[in-house]
Length: 75
Image (cartoon, rainbow, N blue to C red; front, side, top):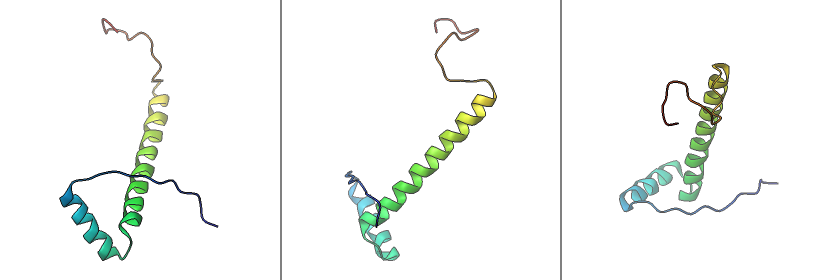
């Protein structure tokens, strides 16, 4: 049984679409499959990056909560 997947639609420049078509052809996959793979990889990378930033800033005592900013006027 495969996982449920949601449909996504986006537009891109003609030259980028042509390049993507060539890449998909070389990889012997459908252009949609290639897009899914590329986007998934980027989402995973960014979520991991955000998690690392959150953990490291928490260790430094930076919470991201609004409040007073010592030494910064007007915030």
